[in-house]
Length: 560
Image (cartoon, rainbow, N blue to C red; front, top):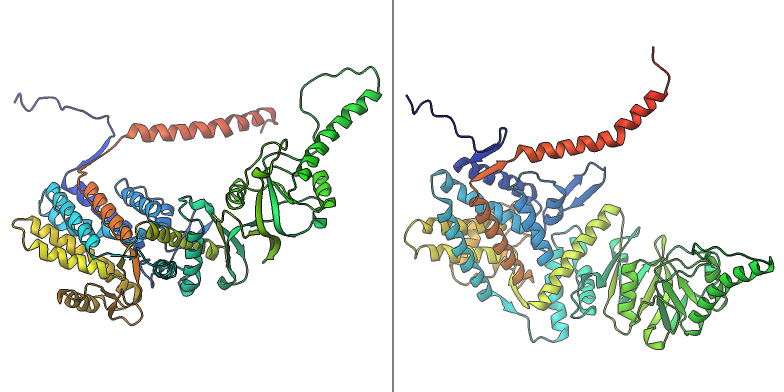
């Protein structure tokens, strides 16, 4: 009786939502599987695109896993982990974002029946980590190095890697055209790691084939004043002055009081202001530069002054473009026009202003440092050009990675099938439950070739059986899905290659995410933080709208 009357112990505040145990793990797995299903159909050369429409009314068409995951606005706490791994894969390697989400989803799907049968998640986690370690070592063993090749051979190999990445994108139809462009752009920036040295400019109109690469810098013509038309629009072997100052006639802003005894003295003050600007312009001309670029405004007086002396000028140039011009031409951005010496001036072989579509572009070619490149993209719709930009970003990242870590593996699901075969064989040498877990990990890896077949409309069971048979024979390690005929083919011979680092990173990230989600057995939702957020929003709205409307009502006429 006394035991029945013991008071209930309350640890958490009333309204706190807690869910724990096996049901919680299964619920998290279901959420992650639903997220993986959202991007499943975007995998591979025949993958479909997703059209995402947000509350602001802007639409995005993409089949890039990371872009879709960012825009989906997922609220489930466990499923957000998949968004994070897609982002990390995108920033680390650039490609394989859909692969990493699919693998993580499939690892969890394979773990679900074991969890429901009462297997402890830690046993699964241990086996998955072992399997991941074995798989990564196997990739390193299979990978082929492209070191020690001549520049031409290397270019062709890198173009194959870029083409493999682009084949699954919207611009896949022109993958050879863009692959060689991407390789040239990456080789142009040399060993520099800064991605912003490769500029991508978008110009609507024309078709994809009108896109071109500038071995230097190109940017849109900036806002210009009268007198601009009289300036020369082409120079050969010219000097360039880069500034971060305004060249405009301005009244001095000093809050000083000047007392004049004679009205003529006022004129001398006005003249002083003119002399300041003329002095600056004169120093620019004396520097010997024929092109003057500034991040701040170059006014109408300065524009006309430069035009009279056959000098080209552009003001309000974007910071990013100015830095790229500095990197390419070897110039230094100046914050003063005093003491401008030759060392701070940049130079380029050809400068011209050219019409591209509806836009005018300032193009610097033949730069001495050469550590920058610009891709000018053309295309019909804005959404199409945006997707082309995202695709090129992935290809650029892949080529950079292939240059740095120069090992490649066969694509088209070949490496996944080989790892699956290897892990199945390894599982047979292990006694105990972990044999089953490693087997399920091996089965999960087959999701990549299966999904490639499903997305292309082929019979995945049939193709997978052929692949299993080929890989089991011991001489089919490079065989993957032939996406055009629906059969199997040697991916290596067909030049379907990807850098080994893409697969290693994808398997690492997917396994870590799966293990993390399996290790969570309780979710606690604090109502306080939610209500606090709600109150803050309400107060903010009241602060903005409430009193203002009340005030108006008070002053208005009384309603009868």
